[in-house]
Image 1: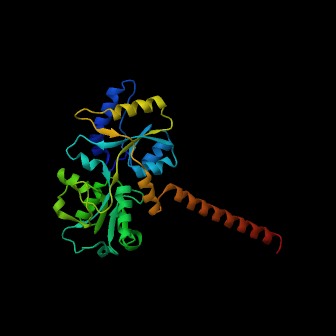
Image 2: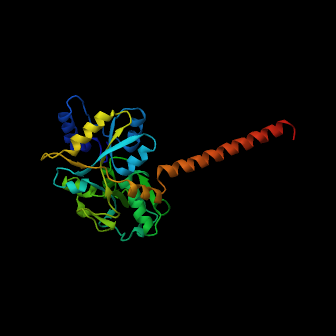
Image 3: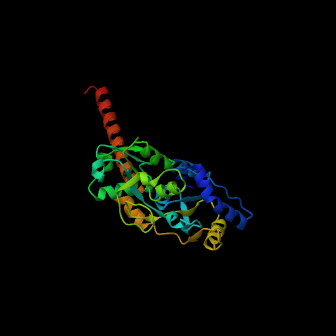
Amino acid sequence: MLALRGDAPTRHFWAPLTEQLNRALPGEHFTLLPLTLDQMREALHNNKVQFVLTNPAQFIQLDSNFPLRWLVSLRSAFEPDNATRNVVGSVLLVRKDSPYHTPSDLTGKKVGAIAPDAFGGYLLGYKALRDIGLDPPRDYHLQFSGFPADALLYLLRDSAVQGVIVPVCLIESMNSEGLIHQDDFRPLLQRESAVPCWSSSELYPNWSFAAGSDVPDELADDVTRVLINSHGENEMRWGAPSSTRQVENLLREVNQHPQQRRFWQDIVSWGKKKQLAYRHSRTRLSAAGY
């Protein structure tokens, strides 16, 4: 599963899920494996994981290389702030005492984000900024810190960067945990949100559960049945998989859809082959004395 905030917080939050599956399916054994984006790709490539829990954008990116079956999507968790767990978005933040008051004020400044392909940790923020006429790779000095996402707010707190693009509700979660003071920060681009969190972008469905191609159909059906029928007081609520159409359209808008990447990779590969063929023909002409 995607370890947005690192290993320990991920294990703490998702432990009830594996406990539920192990109780309901005693013939199987489910364990948690928190991973970054790159680690998840590697684990699927090496067949180290059978099920994946991540956001819809990563599902699309993974599914282009590794056949996956999207089983269910999270509807609500059992925690008091469960609404914040079911959406993914981005927010552009600065320090409250900073001199920046519009996103364009950060032009030429250091702005942190998680990774170029992180959905809430960059891409949705990139789209929101592009919609108002900015081009983050051109206008900002982007610094990608990787996971955990918490590190970005510490960098901003310590003025190591002048702004950050972070997942929606991260700052509220860290504030409630006593890790930072939300009052020390403010959003530089704000839009109305359906959840009690600062947001600079549209919100999309978050966590979804997928099975790898090597998972037997019977086991995939059993897992789906267990999750769909979760009604206990301390159990997460799951429903039918959310549509990926909206996410796919957004990935195409920001040129991050896997099909677009393959297209340009094919163009580059074709160009290199033509260049090598040209050099080879030139070498043969020289050898012939022309």
